[in-house]
Image (tube, rainbow, N blue to C red; front, side, top):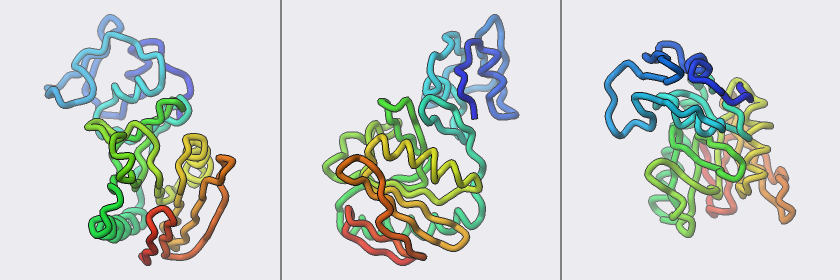
Length: 217
């Protein structure tokens, strides 16, 4: 986790993942390998970023990190149990949405920008309803998905506290937290005051009022 924004290119260099091929010359970050125009960073970075989101956009594609309330947070690799739960739920939810055609299912690594909260995250799974399709852009979602699912990582507080606080403040209507060890699923629903309330907890059951669906996984 980092809550201080780098003021020099050398400081950006120090937070890059180990093995990133780059150097710093006269306070410019110079990447040492060939890149195409589709990458989200340039061969030479000469302007020092002023926010954590700007630092995030400069990082090499595939870097496991997110920004929450202007703090750059490195993310651990997912566990085997995490991935197995995620694959099964993705398959079932994708099939449901293909049939009902009520929204678009997206998954990490795809950026979700909460510009007003100085945050950009990559939720495990999330749904953008048909009426909100305009928030889906080529480089990520710029707006608030109606529903987000996080399979809880080894750093439990990250999903249950940090991300909960972000999603609540941003206005995500349904936030599901799934324990990969036992499939215990907790649903937090945004009430009329904009505060999360736990509306149910069950094992191996995904039950969404927004999507009008109940899926056993």
